[in-house]
Amino acid sequence: MAEAFQFELVSPERLLLSEQIIEVVVPGTEGYMTVMAHHAPLMATVKPGVVTVKTPDGKPDSYVVFGGFVDITPDGCTLLAESAVHVTDIKADELQNRIKDAQEDFEDATTREDRAKAEDLLGQLKTLEEAIKAV
Image (cartoon, rainbow, N blue to C red):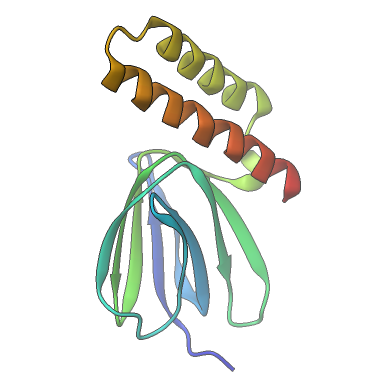
């Protein structure tokens, strides 16, 4: 059986989760990463996506994050999310509003850099929408 470690998921509004888990899958900007106990130290940015944790009894649980940072040490993992909610609490209309805003930002972008950022965010949000449907 895998060894447990401390995981915390924090948003500006509140601490969503602080408990011993055996695994967490984080949507890093370079791709999804699985973190387990004694992981090598790492700091990474997080893109919008679904964070999945597995408790010591083997039960998975999922949270939706909208970007942030993850700090991984051999003893634990802390995810500081720009915004986060439990997957069962995500409101379809809220996600649709974020997608609509990203689409408007893409259409209103005046520089190549702004357009690329807006296009990237829009793609991430649409991917997130599909991931939530699959959960």
